[in-house]
Amino acid sequence: MVSSLLKGKRILVTGGSRGIGKAIMEFCASQGATVFFTYHQTLPDSSATADSKDAGRNQSTSPGHFPDSCPCDVRSEPDIQAAVAEATEYMGGLDVLVNSAGVLHKERIQELTQQGWQDSIDINLKGLVLMCKAAAPHLREAKGCVVNISSVSGIRGTWLGVSYAASKAGILAVTKSLARELAPEIRVNCVAPGPVETDMLDQFADNNAREYFRKRNQLKRIGEPLDVAKVVGFLASDLAGFMTGQTLVVDGGEVML
Ligand SMILES: NC(=O)c1ccc[n+]([C@@H]2O[C@H](COP(=O)([O-])OP(=O)(O)OC[C@H]3O[C@@H](n4cnc5c(N)ncnc54)[C@H](OP(=O)(O)O)[C@@H]3O)[C@@H](O)[C@H]2O)c1
Image (spheres, rainbow, N blue to C red):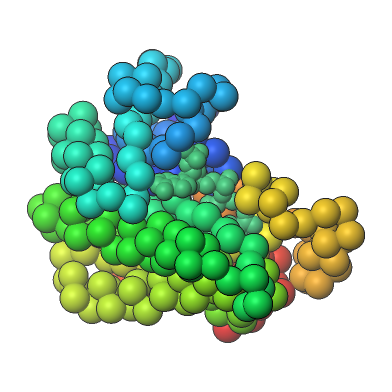
């Protein structure tokens, strides 16, 4: 059923092929938005590798739900510019940018590699900033907003990887800085999830770790991608019209700001 929380909104989601980004894309579409998403290599519901732009086309045509997509490596500014141009052309403008693309390199300090550090910063932080840079003129025109996906790792730190924590902490500062710089036309907010059931969690959590994650929050469960998507939908909607520069933590109450 299509609801109307995001009716008329034109939303670009990075990293929409899997996990949290995919849930955001689907939730926004279910709320009446037109959605365009980017992916790096994985096509949604497919194991195929995208080697051409047309290979990424999602042909869904259900009412109120017209997702389209293109490949975009957020390490590449030309890729980003092309994706924003394609999204705005497809949707006729841009009201919301959701930066969800991200990677986690599980490297403790003694295992830290140049590649791990570079990827974390380039994908999670620099890519997000360059997306904001490319999207800002369109968002300004629409009086739109940005929703960034950080992590509780950026707030409380993590034993999982110093480069991940650094990149996610950077997003908190970028959110506040851009909220100031792009106001009053563009709102910029952030969501910081705790552990969420996605491929990324599989990368670092076995059953014991999952049990530990469950126990340490107040609601005694691990997050689902939809838990995050609903909060992103709220921040993207007019309900959050007087909010900017804020980070909402979605982690079952482990971290309390
Ligand atoms: N899962 C968690 O526990 C958790 C907790 C806190 C925060 N987060 C954050 O939530 C966001 C989504 O995470 P997730 O768990 O959904 O991860 P995921 O399932 O591993 O999905 C990662 C997404 O990022 C895209 N991506 C990876 N490298 C990219 C690149 N170079 N350029 C463009 N896109 C790229 C992937 O595209 P392909 O599919 O094409 O590879 C995919 O769509 C991330 O920013 C992550 O840090 C996750």
